[in-house]
Amino acid sequence: MGLTAVILTNKEPKDITPTANSVDFADEVLLVRDGTGKEKQIGNTKIIFNKLNSNFSDQRNLGLSRAKNDWVLFVDDDETVSKELADEIKQASRDENISGYYLKRIDRYHDQVLHHGETGNIKIVRLGRRSSGKFDRPVHEIWQIKGKVGVLNNSLIHERGDLVSTFVDRMAFYGPIDAKELTKENKPFTYWRCLLNPKGKFLANYFLKLGFLDGLLGLFQAYLMGVQSLTVRVFQWRKI
Image (tube, rainbow, N blue to C red; front, side, top):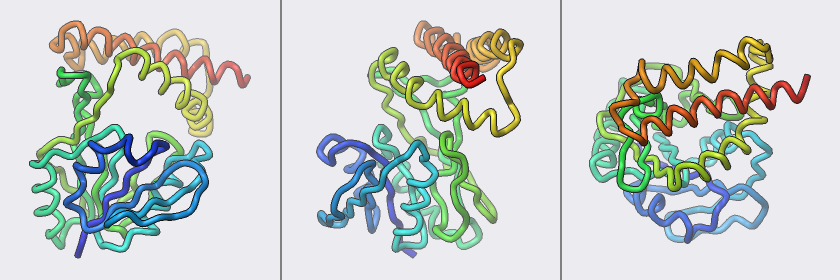
């Protein structure tokens, strides 16, 4: 059967050592790196260059097309796979009746984990059979799996680094792409969306999804999620 781990990055290999070390249990590792350059093989890791062009699904689908093994695990360069999750992945990939798995992902800021809010309850399909489907959407990509999809118990750890600066950088990069995609999905800019969606995002994260239980970090995260929602509407408004 075998397992290929695919890491998406725009960094040098030495700068993603924690991520790379966490997937060293895979039979093959593909590093899909934004940019241009010559492919190279380092141990069981192959480095492949491909221009991002604001489309993460294309990067992931490239990884699918180049993987040699039946099962493929996708990990971003700010994520790590715990030993417990690695053991669970090795066991889960032996199930012949399953085409893919949702992984639970938790956000960690330094030493504190967010257990609540929308980022504390995320489940994303990151493990699947190579031939089971492809990724869709340029950002917030969705792996369209054909067949039965299970859920693994252990979590993928998302290392968020600095709370504010990292979040602002992500908003600046993802905002224009997300705004374009929302418009294509018939969710255009309106003044009501601009006024109500950010407030609704904050209230949902802090109260409905129990973000207040994470203390001040939960409050800051809920606020930033509201700002992110507003930022996307600003990018939509600029295109009117």
